[in-house]
Amino acid sequence: MTEPQFAIDAAGLRKTYGATRALDGLDLRVPAGTVHGVLGPNGAGKTTCVRVLATLARPDGGRAVVAGHDVVRDPGRVRTRIGLVGQHAAVDEVLTGRQNLVMFGRLYHLGARWARRRADELLERFRLADAADRPAGQYSGGMRRRLDLAAGMILAPSVLFLDEPTTGLDPRSRIEVWDAVRSLADGGTTVLLTTQYLEEADRLADAISVIDRGRVIAGGAPDELKSRLGGDHLEIVLEDPGALDRAAAVVARIAGTEPEVDADALRVGAPVRDRVGALTGAVRALDEADVRVADIGVRRPTLDEVFLHLTGDPTDENEEVPA
Amino acid sequence: MTVASMPPIPEIPRSPLGRLRWAAADGWTLTRRALTHWVKRPDQLVIGLAFPVLVVLMMGYLFGGQMEVPGGDYREFIIPGMFAMTMVFGVEATFTAVAADAAKGVSDRFRAMPMSPSAVVVGRGAADMVDSLAALSVTALCGLAMGWRVHDGIVPALAGLGLLLLLRFALVWVGVYLGLIAKGPESVMIIQILVWPIGFLSSAMVAPSTMPGWLGSIAEWNPMSATVTACRDLFGDPAQAALASDSWAAENALLLAVAWPLAIAAVFFPLAVRRYRAMGR
Image (cartoon, rainbow over all chains, first blue to last red; front, side, top):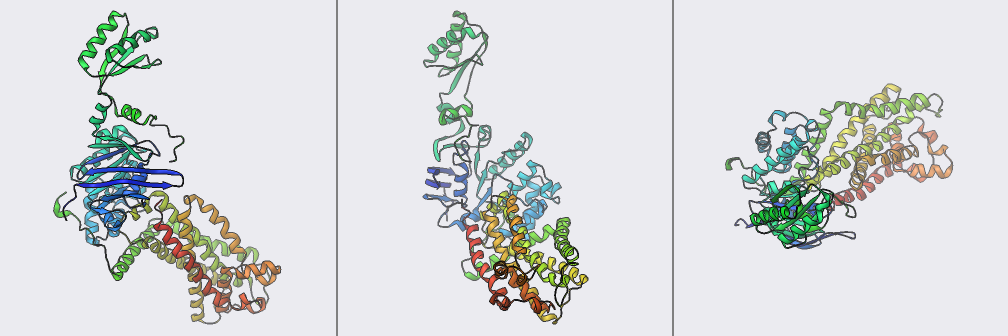
């Protein structure tokens, strides 16, 4: 069999829980060997998406092929080619790190010798060798996550699913996990990563699918997504609230569009095309209008802004959506 | 990572025999996992074994002085009841272990692996049986020290032991099933509350023939009572003859002590495996 071009190829996935449409016609294609970020607010369907692709949940409709096998028709084969790292560190806290990996190795039907050898390799690789013989319950959050990743890597899967791998970790542990994911991707593993952290997707993903209400609403490389939002962004911070109207008028004229005004932060901003022209034009016009400026600059939008723009919902609000 | 160190991708067996071999291997791996827990946490093991001993001592010496048993001795009379009680209380341990795995996502990991779907359930069951055997042995030693004796020889006594383990075996699946449908290991509270009336409303502590008629009937039909009564028969308890009632359930205790657990297992084993498979929520 030839290696499929897409490690994950899903079309029209639907999954309903009661009245909630967790997946509502989700399409997803992930080229082999890439890191793909699935971004969305709580309840958008990220976890359900992973559960369906990892054979934990059966879709109500649509079709998905993972690592060359159909998740509904041939879940057993899919399971031999994937690794799953869920939201909770799914390791046995009483067993040591090594015992955990050997146990999972045996459950992957590696023989005793392979299971031990693989455990040693992975402990080394995820920098857990020193802690190998301590109970996993004594590990730090970051170490436990790395053990979790190691367990997901036992069969050297071609596709690794990471469902919010750094949720609840401190910044240092988060960077440890990022490094680990990066090195897996460099080794050729296809990684599907769900996250609420835009920074995480920006740092790790080759491509991103933004999902909301069980559907992909935008996709592309992080830079593409950012430029689709109008590319560069002119931003002015004023010293005097009385000048807000005048500044807004200046920015409106230069950007050719209605500016966003944040009265509390004394900030006026708008997307612009010609970054240098817009900046020099704004400085000159503000000076002429006698507006005193605390700060002025042109910057690219953050993924947060892309996200807000696409979903129309603040990322950290999750009322009305079930977890 | 070099290509040479890539582990082999397992071939999923197609034949029923091959699948059975996978199931057995996975079941054994998970049994060993549970046994390793006891080695790693001897304190938990000791507490688990001390509990039935505590209950036996409490019942035997707190109540034993006042309870008069015609033709026998209360301390001897309650030991078979304590055995069965230990088996019923074991549901808590099964429940907690299963619910904890589900809550921590360990079950999800298992389900995303090319494992035999029955292995998780089977491994749990096997480990709990080993645990129960240990608990029974400790309770038996305690009973012997308190004056409990086997009167009719070792073979019937072993048969009684077998009936107790059969009851526990049936209850493993109840525990697994409830653990899988529970919200989390904290719900064990409900089980802890439920096992007491089940334990007391039986022939374990008091002969149902001394209860008000309707209550005695309920107690006699309690699956646990069948095991207790059959065990008293098999151990040759001297008080049994005087206290036995002539109801059908009491007369056929041995039959019921086999039939009840088999019926419970026949209902809850498929339920547990199905629930585990259908965790695809």
